[in-house]
Amino acid sequence: MFVPTLMGQCTPEQQAYWLPRALDMQIIGTYAQTELGHGTFIRGLETTATYDPETETFVMNSPTLTSYKWWAGGLAKTVNYCIVVAQLYTKGVCHGTHPFIVQIRDEETHMPRPGVKVGDIGPKLGFNTADNGYLGFDNYRIPRDNMMMKNAQVLKDGTYVKVARHGKATYGTMVFVRVLLVNEAAFNLAKACTIAVRYSAIRRQCSPDSEGSELQVLDYSTQQHKLFICIATAHALQLNSTWLWKTFSDTLAAIKQGNVDTLPELHALSSCLKALSTADAASLIEQCRHACGGHGYMMSSGLPYLYAFVTATRTYEGDYTILLLQTARFLVKAYEQVEAGKPLTPTVSYLSQAFTGKKLPWDSSPDGIIRAFQALAAGKLSSTVKSLRKRLESGLSYEQAWELSTIQLNGAAEAHCRAVMSQNYKSEIERLTVNSSPNVKLVLQQLYKVYLYYWALERTGDLLLYTSISESDIFELQLRYEGLLKEIRPNAVGIVDAFDLRDEVLHSALGSYDGNVYERLMAEAQKSPLNAEPVNQTFHTYLKPMMKGKL
Ligand SMILES: CCCCCCCC/C=C\CCCCC/C=C/C(=O)SCCNC(=O)CCNC(=O)[C@H](O)C(C)(C)COP(=O)(O)OP(=O)(O)OC[C@H]1O[C@@H](n2cnc3c(N)ncnc32)[C@H](O)[C@@H]1OP(=O)(O)O
Ligand SMILES: Cc1cc2nc3c(=O)[nH]c(=O)nc-3n(C[C@H](O)[C@H](O)[C@H](O)COP(=O)(O)OP(=O)(O)OC[C@H]3O[C@@H](n4cnc5c(N)ncnc54)[C@H](O)[C@@H]3O)c2cc1C
Image 1: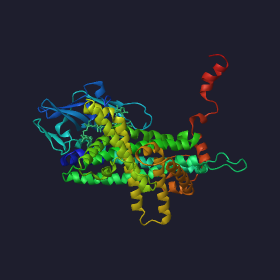
Image 2 (image 1 turned 90 degrees about the horizontal axis):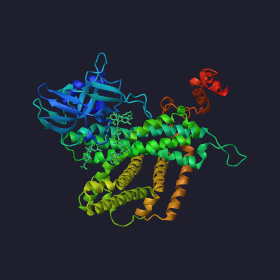
Image 3 (image 1 turned 180 degrees about the horizontal axis):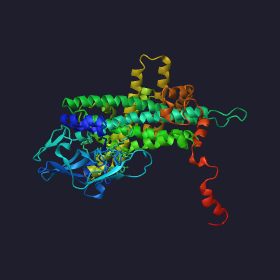
Image 4 (image 1 turned 90 degrees about the vertical axis):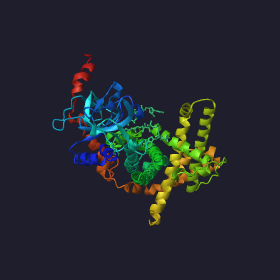
């Protein structure tokens, strides 16, 4: 995040100085925003940067324990520079949070600079090869030029000048990384399903008729139900990530021309897609682990590491709930635009047809299911706005009414995001397979149908509320879904092989291309230090005395 922030928040002159040093790794940096006391609520950060016009420096301070920076990757022992997000004070006025480039260690000795307190935050669920750190300042001075001045400036005499056209321009790096994280979610989920599908083709367990040989576990319907949604989701996330990257690039190009009109939609999209993709990837990676039984619990399967790594993405760069609530703000505004008969931006344009007050007639074709997801999002949004207004009428303030409605708001944002993802998934497959062979087309269509049927069946309660779906429609959809799993089964290993992930990348005894699962598990077991000696020291120290009654 250090380099993207230098790119996004520095003036051209600052970039000319800092970027070559960072890109050549003459300096190593990190992004320290979160504090011990605040992560989500950026406006509540407590680190201060107070401008002193006498010396033309900013004085950095950590006034409380909770103001200590906490979490930045590489901060503890690796980096010597740091982007610090702090409350800017000049001429006695606080202008809110701004980013500063701060040298925290000597470039030669790597010793922390006087006035800098830095250390490691300790072991975590995962990510233990990263030295996430804490950081505090005691009247530590940095030159005025180290304020990142693309979006706001402090002149030599201490005058504050706002440059950016959008109030949240300093949040740009977060939006950028949220966009990247959708791709990261797709990549890691693809790894997990490659491991689990390959292993399920090797693993044999139980024999349905007592005479026959044991079945590959991949032949069981329940195993297919666990795993094929993982493959389909990896595809959905990958295609949505490419689509989101294009939306991001277009918005960036417009901002460079001085047009910030599309930023709110990009923020709403990147927020909900980051939230849903990381949450789906984490829970489906865990599902892949379950699908591998006990061996999935081994570190050598690669799955625990993947899960620990990916589950953090649900939290960092904006927690799941918080980001969905950001999307919900955008949706409520879109709802008000529909009421006022105003035009809507592309990804919410479906709302203009959705508030008919009637249930959408059920249609089980892929396009019909996508329209149903849209009706569901619109219906949830409409109910949420009703609740919000009822609470306002009862005399509550907007903030109180909003807070009480946040469970519903999150539900509406999740439904909207699922509708956007489903729509993009199908249309991108259609666009990309125009010149593909009929067989490739067929397999890719089977997968997006799995995605649509799976989520329709997961949301039958909502569909009953907002569409005309009947009990028999649900029954029919269930049978179609189960049939589809059987159609995909013969190609399942080929489909995950097509992710083209090398063994070195998978790093898994269960998922290697050669399928030598048992040999690899045994070879990994031999690496346990407990196997280095026939009798472990602890036998003599503890077990034997206990067994002889001498403890
Ligand atoms: C280069 C990295 C590559 C990554 C690739 C993956 C490789 C992975 C491997 C390892 C990497 C590990 C890296 C880990 C790095 C982790 C880093 C971090 O976590 S950094 C810290 C991140 N912190 C957050 O994300 C904090 C979340 N909180 C917020 O974003 C905000 O506080 C908020 C919740 C959005 C609220 O902000 P605020 O209170 O200021 O605003 P509001 O009053 O609520 O809203 C006012 C209006 O502003 C709009 N808004 C808010 N944010 C934005 C934005 N970013 N852009 C545009 N508009 C924004 C908001 O919607 C409101 O609009 P209106 O409704 O009023 O119109
Ligand atoms: C592995 C990892 C790496 C990280 N790397 C960095 C880094 O490099 N740099 C950096 O600056 N930070 C980093 N972070 C910090 C990360 O950005 C924060 O953890 C994240 O933004 C969430 O903030 P928090 O931990 O303070 O949670 P909190 O904000 O305290 O949230 C706690 C809970 O309260 C809920 N909550 C909070 N506010 C509200 C609200 N208004 N309405 C409803 N619910 C609410 C949240 O949904 C959550 O469930 C990293 C974190 C991790 C786990």
